Length: 274
Image (cartoon, rainbow, N blue to C red; front, side, top):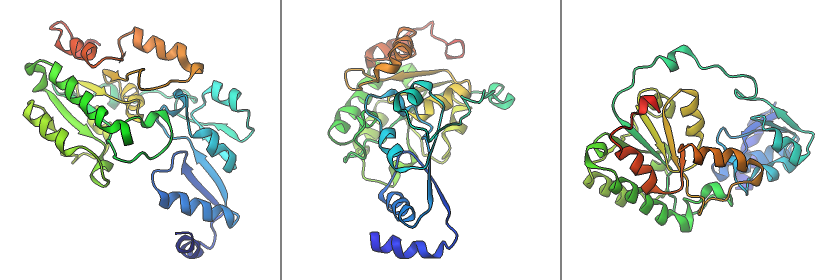
């Protein structure tokens, strides 16, 4: 692989800077960045737009050792704790993002979208945010089925099961889960709409069963959202404990799939007022 990319990179005769997200989604990007770095290119890392720093184990501290600049979402505890001088605070949140009028005024249908992570058989990175990969993938899917099974039939018929489009390109444990979801009366998203933000603008309620980029996107698009994130499985950073605890106390985050399903089963629950 090194020889291939070391040869291929020669066609980029003026490659002075490389930009990459702080998580490497596949080895090709990693090899390309490494070869470019060895050839003298400046390496700039853009923090992934997901809430990765909330976790006890994060890859950012490793990325900082090899990059020239890290463009971060601007979390002050991160900047203080890591103490590097190559951190640049740059993001929609840090710079005072304002919702656009078309996001706020969008017309929503009656569907509920269940956004799930692709449960890969192999673990990609050693971070607590990837609890749904490797050994944890089967249990992760079992919890999805437990959640849907606990929701009453009239609500189930409104649910659309959607996993990340990348799941169609890699080896993951979803086929058996999809069949069970269909048997339970849940619709399966055909992923014809690739951009999750476009889905969020139409759905009445977004449900996530992992702490993902989509949660931020849902908040920014003013979409009612709940998150199932079992703290028995996920270790959150002590630096953000006060924020995390508030989300659970407000019934925006749930440890239990039963508690989350009880909210949906409540006849007085109205997503538009959530």
